Image (cartoon, rainbow, N blue to C red; front, top):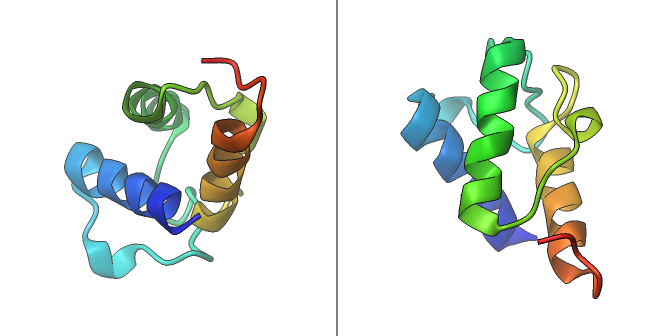
Length: 83
């Protein structure tokens, strides 16, 4: 999962200019002040980078960075991952 988590962190720092010291596995997307538009953009950025589509219920304000990374990792390792 560490590669996926690093991709999540990279997307947040590069696209949303969030300082790395604010990014921890237990941090929620709401704590990063991400509104619904930012969450949708975040999902698109991750889809472009990883080639899998994250469902909206896995990227809500209450979702932690670790949970986003775990969900993406599961999508990437599923034999029938929707790519």
